[in-house]
Each structure stands twice: as C-alpha cells, then as structure tokens.
Image (cartoon, rainbow, N blue to C red; front, side):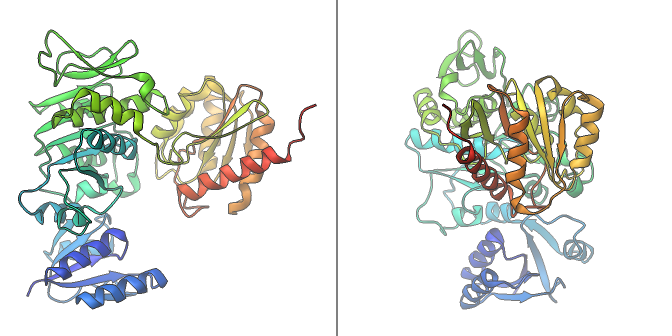
Length: 462
C-alpha cells in the first residue's frame, strides 16, 4: 500500500492525516514539537491507524507522497523528498484531488493583503443569496475536510482563501472563478524574489473559469493580461467588463445584462465597513466573485451590510482625550500598513516587528505627510527608523528596545504624548509579530488592553 507522509501536526496537517487515514491509507506524520496539543492530536490519529513520529524530519522509508501545509522548498524534509523523486503536494491540492462529485464550485482568492476580509465578505454575500457556503483554506476550516465530508454539512460553494505558500504546492486547481487582490513584496524569505512570489500568486489563474483582477494594481493587471475571460475591479469608474465605483455607488459592468451600454448598481460605499479605499477594493473583488456564480445585486448589498470584520483589522479601540486608537495588528507587511495609514489624515504610527525581507522606504515616503510621530518596536525597528530619517526627518520618533510583551503600556504612553486632539494612534506594524508576541492577535490584544489602561489612568476633565 502506498505511504503518504504529512509534514507537520498543525490544523491542516492533522486534518489531512485524519482524512487519509479514514480512507484506509497508510499515513506517517512528522512533527518536531511534542507538546500537549500535539500528543492529543497524535492519540486521535493513532485510533484511526495513522502514525505520528515526534522529533524527526527524516523521510520515511517507502514514502510515495509528501503533503505539506506550506513549508518552503528549501526546508530539509521538502528538499529531501524532491531529491528522492517523491511527489510533493499541498493540502489544498490534495483537497482538490479528493473532491467527490457533484463537487461544490470553488471561488478562490489570493493577494498580498485583504484576503481574509474579502473572502469573508464573499461568504456573507453567498449566504445572503441563500447559498450554503463556507470560508476555507487559509481561513476557516481546512479545505480537505470541507470537500470530503469532514464538516457538518455539504456546501453549495466554497469561498477559498489561498496563500502564496498554498498556491506554490498546487498544480491542478480549476476554480469556477479566481481573484487576485494585489501583489506587493512579502514573504521574500520564503520565495526568494518578488518575481517568484508573484508567480506563485499567478497560479490561481491558470485553470480558472473567470479571472478577476485588481485593475488598479500594475502587477495584478499584468498577471491577468494573458487570460481572455478576465474581469477587472477598480476604484475608478468601470469600463465594460469591470466592476467599479461611480460617485458613492459600487456598480457592475461585467455581469449585468448589457455591460457595454449599462451598469447595475450593487451597493453603496456606505455599506462597506470599516470604510477605507483598500476595503472598498476588497468588497469589489468579493462582489465580482459572487456575481460570477449568479449572486443577485440585492444579496451583494445585504452581504456587505451584514459583514462583521475580523478583529485586529482597523478595529477602533477607544477614544481618549479626543485621540482615536485603532488596532490594525493584521497589517503585517508594508503594503498592508500603507493602506491602513492612507485611511487617516493625522497619525501617530506604532510600527515594527519582523519585516521578512521587505523594504519600507516607499511606505515611509508615502506616509510622511500624515505622520505626527512614530513609536517603533520589534526586531527590525532600526530599518524603519533609518527610513524615517531619510523620508520623514521632521517627524519625532521614539525607539523602544524592550522585547517583553508587557512593553505595550510604554508604547501607548509614548504615542499618547506625541498625539494631539483629532489624531489617530494607529498600530499598523508593517511586520510580523513573532519576535515579541504569539501572533498578530496577541499583539493587537496587548495594544487594546494598554489603551484601555491608559484611558483609566487619565484624570477626569473638570
């Protein structure tokens, strides 16, 4: 019997092993960390007949397939498998191969930023149209469970968020429609170059029935150019074949009955929340995917109105002394931070973390006119400080070297001292969080707690 090796015992890896073992396949999972959560997962899999090996990354003898949940090609286990001629696939690719007919169509979406928000908007639109839909992939439940009956109910359609890691290891996906939100430097430590990163993103288009792309993003537009069935979305007035914005309306000139001579109103800009240009772009992409499978305009509008944003995405925390405090800890790269900064007129910026090889000069140059101060934290704060000295030399900067997670109280105190009434203190780090925190949610929660403590410490006005 063929042997499948699964790389890692995370959420997706455990789901893969569970599904394959339930199908009667031989499965060995390799996991470096032996903690309580991992031991519980291993015990569950053992009952299904799957073996978990802790503390080793040696390729099992006789393995014919390696399933990875996003590991880089240069990881020793992946490199060993490739050198040995073992097929390497991702969890998403495996899920595509294991679909049972009649299979629910996939509406797939990727991009450097906005993926989770756009996929959740899309899911809200699909539900508003009466479809049985769920968000899967890089968000929500693992795709392999959704397509093999591992979830509570079968679905009419899947809203699939895909990362560049997942797309790299996916070779045969053919979604009903696929969207690319944007492309900016990110994960260069994984992919090596921007060109390789963009090529991974572009794989989402290769077999898609309808290609949806950001017409305002030069790289996305270039990657979509070879495809005949392409629909652009834009913050400008749309041309025929696009979805865009006319005054305060989101309008469709791609899926309406007469796109050459007419447009169909889908929603108001006021239906998009939190309102910001990049979030309108997310809504446009979601609407295009929804329209590609026949969702009516009223369901697009209702889906946007009923959409509840995830935490740590431009989340208003509190107003203290006429200064707004906003948590956008999810802005883990310069492109996301730039979009967040552009939404506010006067900002005290909290930034820093792990830049993952990305450059911040253009981010700082663009943001400089709206910056009133900056508080820098984390491993790569020095690179942001250097960019500030080049492009925003007149902006006061506070450098905080502390690495403990309790540092947020000092961060908020310093930011408050730089802020004036009407300003926004914005946590939009432009970097990952694992140098100091368990993840971006932990960083955002630490910020919000510190803001609330700061508000309580202030004496009431007389």
